[in-house]
View 1: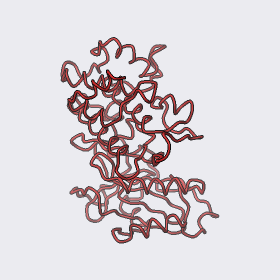
View 2 (view 1 turned 180 degrees about the horizontal axis):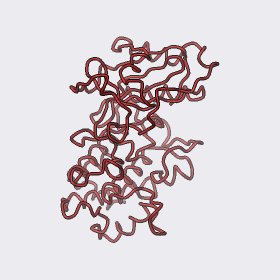
View 3 (view 1 turned 180 degrees about the vertical axis):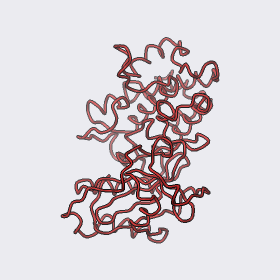
Length: 362
């Protein structure tokens, strides 16, 4: 999100996963298909659009509150330190702190109208502690520069590994795909069933699932996330945001938001893992442009072999494929109430039969 201010600070969280990687300033580079984990962008020197009327404003009250909340466990940085760590490259780039810690730094455009959303994003992600959810290392805003700083994941996004320049069929085989499916399911189960206030991600998609060296997934980008309502079965949003191809029907048409829109989007991700196809395929034959519309008849016919990515060959576990196919078919059901909770999806992928009983009850 975006935020104006003339003050700057990078807040480093002490409750996060550490990295033992080492690097120096010369190794820092733009975050691209070869080196990055967030968004590939241009190679220009660091520059952020300025707005003089925003630069002179004092620190917003909301950010003062964040600073006070985390001051006991936070380390403060200046903007120039990040510029030095990253060799002043690009708008999304790879950085390296003096202690060898590698970072992914994302620059956001300043805008006064998204202050609350930016603060909410920070509040949500700093409240989350799960091995399959990305760690926010910190943030910086100074002289109208706004940056989010994350741990760097070397293999990039699931989208890159399935559809892009990181695609390696031999390296990203069935066992790796199944690991990703379970990890993301566990992350969503955690979000939806937190003892504290649950969270709805609202933008689950393959480009927001980042992968470590051993293909451990981490759900990222909480820019659209919302706290779930404690008093209502759903929230109604007037501004439908997200990515076409992953949007649940009730959200796309009526703006209704609850945890079941994440379940639907997760079902689309499962179809990507199974088929190797994109959610929307502009080059596909007429009637097959939508992954969901293409897959549903196959799911209903139970001829799941025709659903599988040809690059997998015969190197897959038949039982695991059946479980993932069932999970996908349940998650993309049109009616929200007919979709399972993520806790049931986790059990299904782990081999539990409880979901089959749940399905029969529906």
